[in-house]
Length: 173
Image (cartoon, rainbow, N blue to C red; front, side):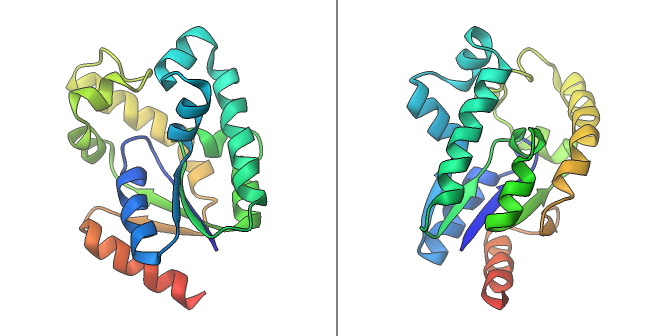
């Protein structure tokens, strides 16, 4: 069983993914952390020095490794990974994709100053600009995220409730 968490940056894929993997007794993989580890650089530096195309190719290489692995796992994907080429289709073919849906306002309120700074596209935006940027960017990404096997509106739920619901869904499969 492979569970791929998709959604906008800052929606909680990594924090929820770790809790889910622990609850399910499987490995947790964060594609952003894997890229940083293998490249020996932060995502912001990779974007700055190598460009987005290079970053997306690094992400894809990791996705292909995970897709061909026999290991059960929960994978937190980068916010843009589902948009690139046929990444969403690949994830849907080898596992279950779960779209963690939140509003721009919710995500903005979740992001610490460090969280904003480490994301190249959010650097230097004030609160108003951040929400406006996110709304527009999320609308462009929505069609890709909607290809997920399951969509969960995270708005009314705590992480504990989300883990319980997701586990129940996976167990029913």
